[in-house]
Image 1 (tube, helix red, strand yellow):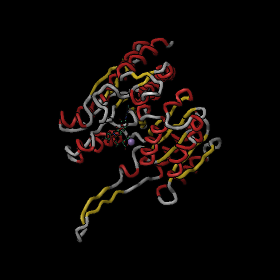
Image 2 (cartoon, helix red, strand yellow):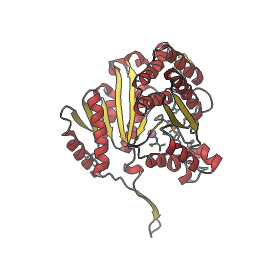
Image 3 (spheres, protein in one colour):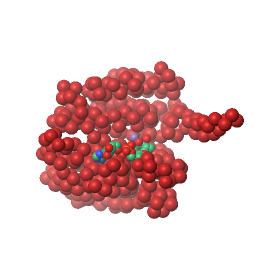
Image 4 (spheres, rainbow, N blue to C red):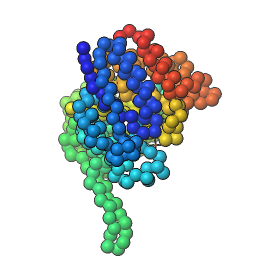
Length: 367
Ligand code: NAD
Ligand code: IPM
Ligand code: MN
């Protein structure tokens, strides 16, 4: 009987609410598959800073080090609340980026998926959605501007300045290129390489390495697209994309746009993979505007569980079952407030009820 240790980092804002629903699904998966998940909650984020004095406490690091996989809720506070925490202790700089660095989770998979039957969730017209949206954004997660040298200072003339550096070396690019080409091979054998080589030297090197790695994948058709144009095509013709690969900051922005074309960031789960460790999190933030109201969409968090089942535990069929269970809740005409605006024809249910319905649907599916 398999026994997996999973670190649960509830995070801030809606984090604990959507984590509760993900845990229900994990518990059912364990029961159905006759395996054990040791689920260990550990403080992380702004809540950890207020409780323990640090957003990524040593004890949490230990729990994560010892876990087979990590499931993380969103962290962060509203802009105003954030100001109450010293800049380097804010949960983005003090917890999230250190988590990514600690486990070198360079490959971030952010699926942007909406079947044709749910086209009404999207702000795009049905004729633009066509057969549905099915894109895998692969974002490099531990390089670029996020992790470059930074300097803040004042010139002798008294002018305040800041310098942030965007750095990539060929090894960092090559490993994410391999992930992207491998993913394209498993899908439609088309890869959109997103860059800005008309301005950035880092993109020139990025494209050179993409082309080099591409020689090992002659079956994959590569299209190189400038990031600004890609933003437009995502709205005008999302069907042209299948796998998209890009550097860290471009991936941050375009993946939120992905949530936008689906109709809600609540539909955006993700997987963050390193060579030795993986963690899973929604792509979105802590949604301070709706926190504590039991109205957040837990799809992103439960979808992150589905990605964990497949990518960390090799439970491919059960992962598909979890996706299927969530889609069946939508197909039955229910969703949370983000996707059930008055007049949409969708019945509004709360966070908890969404989780309950997923569990109910999963119970009915054969293991
Ligand atoms: P956000 O993603 O939290 O929210 C943007 C909008 O999307 C809001 O209207 C919110 O209500 C909605 N939304 C997000 N998730 C939802 C869900 N599951 N169901 C329904 N609606 C949902 O972005 P923000 O407001 O710019 O950021 C808030 C905080 O989150 C900031 O502190 C930011 O740094 C942090 N953040 C953390 C992560 C992370 O932990 N990986 C990611 C993004 C932002
Ligand atoms: C994300 C978030 C983070 C990022 C922030 C909170 C540091 O926006 O996971 O997309 O920019 O990577
Ligand atoms: Mn983001």
